Length: 345
Image (cartoon, rainbow, N blue to C red; front, side):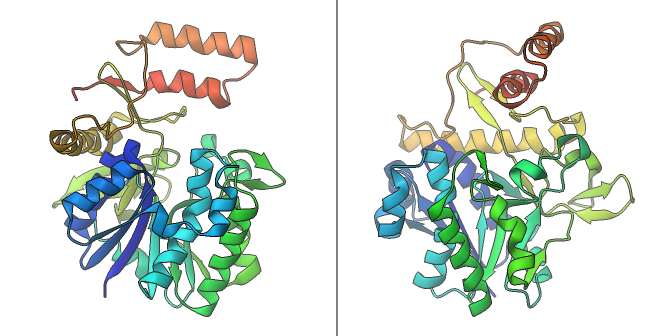
């Protein structure tokens, strides 16, 4: 059975999207990836490359009157969130798929995701929990579940939940907390109680991310990447990792995460460094044919080297004294330097 996936991104995430695609080619048996191109550069790239097991979809093909009516009222990020449910809907309708899974573009697979989709059994929908480590629990704000790997069956029960999600996002989808809502994500918290037939993924290898990796040990063993839950000793195969918050900067710098998450040297070695190298390799391929395209979405920075521990400590206490905490944007400014590394690209 073909595993059908969809994702969306613009040219700033092109290298990420390509690494996602290549990881599926390596590990997923019988898959197809539908890419919604959120700018002309992405559309042109995939039209020219004609990659196997990949279909690119333009905004002119995808956007309907309801989406266009709210587009000008949302930021670029908010509009992407608004469109998530609609991308799944489009794939189910246009390609007559029985099952479709939405993926965030900044993910990488390390084993066949079929085991995750099989876990949903007869249920109509499958969602993944953030599984926050205690110090980083943002469930009250961001929601219990992460829109990163969401599977829908093309059945009446699945379509009912999907249509509800799409309508909710059309009505309200913003990067702020308001009346128990946040982006497209907080809506998922109510699905189990409202609709039933919703499976919460249990496999610990699906949904690894900066906000929960502190709960596990990792190692390469017999050609596989394995994890072990520290609290229970439960072992599992790593299926995918979500590289949320990774950013490229000018002056050959990359930041692994944009929040104050603890990232061990083990995780940097097994996940982040290989992932960045893959991004750079894909970026170089893109640049050979499209020299004016930035496939990493590099941001401008005046800094030309990672900040020292002393500077970071001074900055931390400065924010603590001035603001009382280091939440929100100030925390990101601090932590982006905490995980800043020199690279060549």
